[in-house]
Amino acid sequence: MVFNRKKKVVPFRTAGELDAMAAAGAIVGRALVAVRAAANPGVSTLELDEIAEQVIRDAGAVPSFKGYHGFPGSICASVNDRVVHGIPTSSEILTEGDLVSIDCGAILEGWHGDSAWTFGVGTIIEADQLLSEATKMSMEAGIAAMLPGNRLTDISHAIEMGTRAAEKEHGRSYGIVDGYGGHAIGREMHMDPFLANEGAPGKGPKLVVGSVLAIEPMLTLGTTQTKVLDDDWTVVTLDGSRAAHWEHSVAVTEDGPRILTVRPE
Image (cartoon, rainbow, N blue to C red):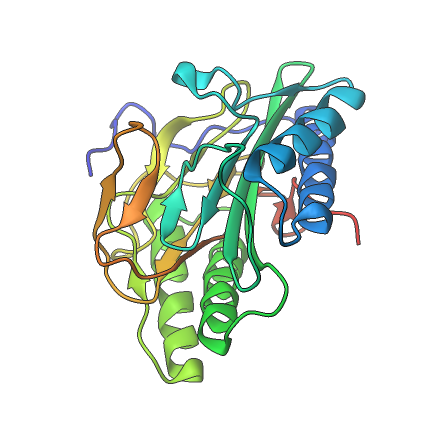
């Protein structure tokens, strides 16, 4: 990983700008909740995409994924061995026991929200449930490290330690997907610096009040290695093992980490 030495701090926003980002993030949260409620056996991933887009546009926002470098969907729908960037289609029909990762973004008044979560369709096996929980634990560990004065890789290290804690609790190992991670976010969806999901602490630009990062660990039940399918988007595990993906956009504040992509209960 190479850091731009000219950028000594992670990009930061004013309090008002964070509120604007939180407004965009709340729309993303509502879209994700609506998608999960609709994700039943027999439903296509394209139908889920249409639901998310409707929620976003009804709120006066724009789906940030749609058209991004040519991506055709408003969500990334990644089922089972798909890690990220799954394209929603009418031919992909959800079935009982599927493990689904939904990534969603919205732009409101020029500010981006970006969030993801993994859930099961109907009843899922325990290993898949624990995988999703482990990924969420890793994300939450990263969020907890979003403190003024910390460095970028302090977040990476915290995410990795969250994964190791989950491994100890669950009595099994998880693969931390190689080469993918989080990012700064603001008036663009993907901004520097890149945030790895593992690594030694104490390196990279500092976090200051107002710094914002999208924290997004991706874990598997097996390999750390992936490949991209012929659609040039969908990332799958090399060994066919199942994957999970959790993400929140998070700001550093004087009062502790602030999640900007809150989901309604």
